[in-house]
Length: 302
Image (cartoon, rainbow, N blue to C red):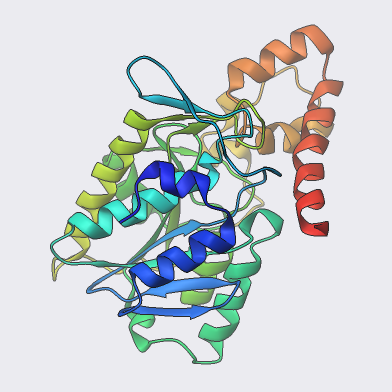
């Protein structure tokens, strides 16, 4: 398997080819869209191959302990951390999970959309119909769990028991995959911080913690009595407190900024957002929000 540095330095096309060679005996792929790796355990692990950064990683800076990584070009932990995590979990698992590596998540989940089309047209293995849960590793921080439109309380309780705390997010590949496969899904922290900025960093210890926990989940799913967690659509008429996000939304924040604020929590710690608001006012939220999506649009146009 590739080490983390290899994952960081290859561009999306190079990484796609390297993974296809690595898993060729068990892989099904659509060029420029996704690589599906067959497994034995009915759990699908997901990560995406692209990053938002315009330049390839050439220089990697580390702290003295070698546990924090950054790059002047943008380290690309979103989501090369997830790519590395999937390989690590697969390599050490006694019974292998299924893996899905997607392309172009950052520009609207293009690879995941191709995967869903192929699945709905019955071009993919029937084993996908038996998945017990979907786990994506593509979230900032160390213990976040994001469920998007999936509202299965038993599944959420299971993930929370593993030490992850429910948070809110705007979009990732499982937003498309979970309803298509009819299986509950979660996006877990991958140990990166300040995503979509040149200040992005990777905390290797936080990444390793998620790898360990997800490995435990794969072992759980291998047991015959482990349940299938069904995808249940969330009813968005409920207020934010249903998901426990009231504490994340400042009480003095005007409603017009709330959706932007919640989206920004995918990329910035709350303390940093609040420091920006104190200095620049609420208008800085709109600027930060636009900066994130401008970078995605620039990548799509290229």
